[in-house]
Image 1 (cartoon, rainbow, N blue to C red):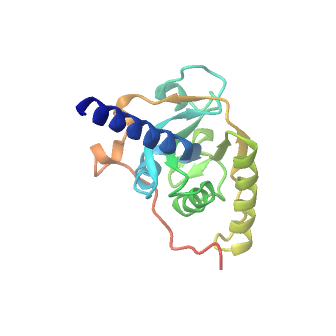
Image 2 (cartoon, rainbow, N blue to C red; image 1 turned 60 degrees about the horizontal axis):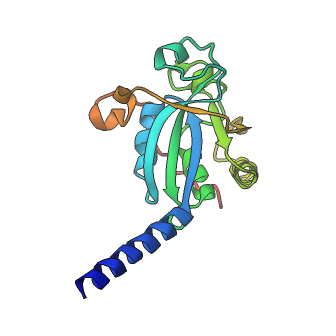
Length: 188
């Protein structure tokens, strides 16, 4: 009887894990300094895990020091794993467009350089289409004075930043942060 109970529990756990995997999605977004953006994104209901790093460049296994030179082609990015049953990709993007200024070229606040550009690195055609649709809605809303210039490009790589950069604002509550959530309504 005990063996049967354990078998049933293991099967139930496996079924639950399979269902969770079915709704697991990954997004890669860049919107300026990744410290503050990660802190805001990780608090969104449905976000399961975040990791900061670098996407879109031409050097493999790049480091923070290399990216700060501004010549590697990488953007400071966030890998976001989320439960699509709780948070859709479209809703994640709408929140993303409230957290940073997607209308400035290679700049967020005082941070300037290509590594601070606004980017959506799509992993499939559905994400690409949703990104274009979302930008159209954001532009039509006129919440931002200027048009969104966020690049929408195919995901090619993500290199995690050093451990000291992961959850930086959580570890350093008074650390540098140029991100905040704006009270915009893109769907009015």
